[in-house]
Image 1 (tube, rainbow, N blue to C red):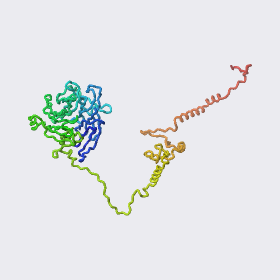
Image 2 (cartoon, one colour):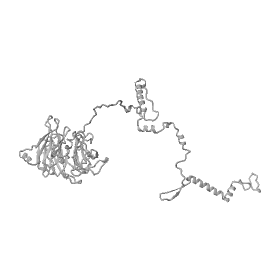
Image 3 (cartoon, rainbow, N blue to C red):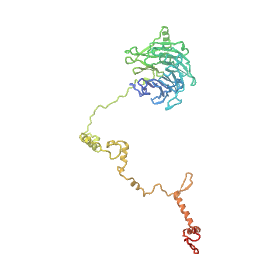
Image 4 (cartoon, helix red, strand yellow):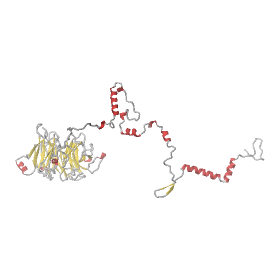
Length: 527
């Protein structure tokens, strides 16, 4: 009971904290869940750490208690006719309700004719959208698809109820994902009279009683009816007329003991004001009204500050004993009893806001001379004032004012000196030499040619992690290969037999003395 959520048709959700507000009652956060879609339903988790937000789109969302986005529901395939085969709503969402005991389950209803039970720990699809695999199809009396206009959980979480666009009220027992839910467990086919501009009266709200035995419904036909879940087909237990709704989100609220029902009524004309009616569902007043032939409200309170405004949404909080009323004029009122109510609005109505104090008084200072710190020579920047005066004179000169700004001598991030305002340019100007572009890179590298390399070492061995010694090679692989070839040549030169053969091959051949040349000039034995 420390925070209140307020959603409206301006697409905004406002979060109020009674512990941090003063009597001005301003929200501490304002969010827009879905751009261009009004908020139709809000529901807190039983743990209070998150809430469900249903907008006019097909994808409800989950936020934490501070308004931070947590999760978004998936949108189903609009080309699939069977809603049980899709993983999300395909049209406008009309209502939402959190499970009364489990913080990871919630219920939503949509104009696509389905109720969907979501498990926040279930599977996710593309872009981490939550998928739904537990669907209840809503049908009319002819077994045709019918839009679900409202939904609600029972106090024990074992049943769900919905109001349909044909004026019927239906209830199911939650069994499991495998159940097909072909027929509702309880149904009031003609709960509300059919309208003239649609197939039936739109049931804008359904709400279980605190004991879970009765169900209250409200429609645009101006009636609020209470049903016994054990015999819904026999008719309502009681009905209250003349409660004209204002908008398709008009709801009702039970008192925590289930004896009184509260609903807001729209004004009769544009100049009138709406009212908040309290009806007795049980007790002596209920019996007296029934014997008199009609049910009248116990109390009717005027609601709305502006003419033509009326209450739309009502919430009766059990712990704080407050009745919160949201009006069509955008206002939210909290009704409480100073003696019975606890915390809630009582924390903020008595808390004054801290006004801002402005120093408007003047005081006389007895001093011969007042020194301005910026006027001292050490803090004075005469050059800046001089440049400012030169710039103003140049702008007044008709010729100098048309002269373009010269290009920068350094950098490429602007066309004048004033353009160098980034941190990167400031760092480069301060840390890099000014003549870096005029330097020769080859000369700069040759400065380090005569210096010994920092990677050279005199070590001849190293030890690995196990402590084993490994000698370091004195030369590279190519140098070792060339040294090996030279050593082999030296060994061959030291062999005397090999040296004689090499000397014989190197000497030229001489003819024998007994051989004479023939007439053709050839010696014997030559070809």
